[in-house]
Image (tube, rainbow, N blue to C red; front, side, top):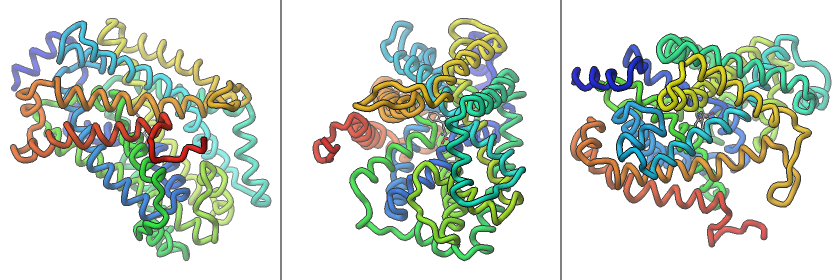
Length: 458
Ligand code: TRP
């Protein structure tokens, strides 16, 4: 095994590797846990009515998310390459499968450009929290609208977030990503536990929040809710664009891929449920509606934070910014690793140039007044990018990755990478060949509004 590692490091000189076993888990959990968990999961759960949606989401994490995460890590570690190089390495130089990697690099570029804008709002709200929220509920909620429509503020905070991402990714695998994940992820966990206990024991909404999240009422489960649960499982675990291929390529041969993937999926799910508990406790305590859509965090919570004071709101937005940062660096790392491995650029050059390009492109999302006609109406670049990447690009990338693993990736190599027992491998093999592709095709058709039994309002 030692030989394998040294021969790899000969062919790809100075390739980074996580320093410790925890390095991969923290960095991969850092990538998975982000705005998707703390901002998006609670608000879509609120919209789709709670428990039943949560249950379907949990099932999707297990039968689609986990197998796909295992597949991506196996591809990355076997190939010791960025997503494009990985498919070339495991198939052949001119393999059409490398398109999967290309698609991933493009998705990373596009997702980060708008993700950075939401992350910027989170940072802005740290400072708004320190100053404190005052005035009527309408005035507090208007602060968010003002932030979004002000090109100056949105661009400022987008710039701050991209600079932080660039600074960390420039530090490389161990000194940058791993070291910062080691500090940020446990900090996030501690803050979230604090908020959850506050919600459960110091408000009157705790038991109602638990009931809302964990007591399924299947009469509320529409077909669309079930499909969205599947799509969200995808997004929240950072799947479908090679983020886990890239992080897996830095993983030691001696680490067990199955166990690591289980751990990362578990932590991601745990954080989402904890965030949901904390937020809905507050929502119910103040007798508000759970279905507040995208405004749940930035518009609704500050109204509550006015009473709880900065002691709650400052940690909350710091946590949200941390979570977004460790996800942002994984998106940037995918793009950067491609230019390091394939183009032979130095890390510093790749990070500055690509980070800079993503930053400039992101300005289109930050300035909300720029719109384009899309699907029959004028929409902001932000919404268009969010829609195209989540509904088309990630599912296509995930499906191709899944098919590659099922039918092209050599069986012996797969068994070798998988690590855990024979029976477990066979279960994995069946799931990745049958269950996962079917589920992903359903999400994709839904994204294209092509499912026969759905009403797309046409
Ligand atoms: N999973 C992150 C979140 O929940 C977002 C993210 C980071 C992501 N890297 C990704 C999503 C790669 C899709 C693909 O916020």
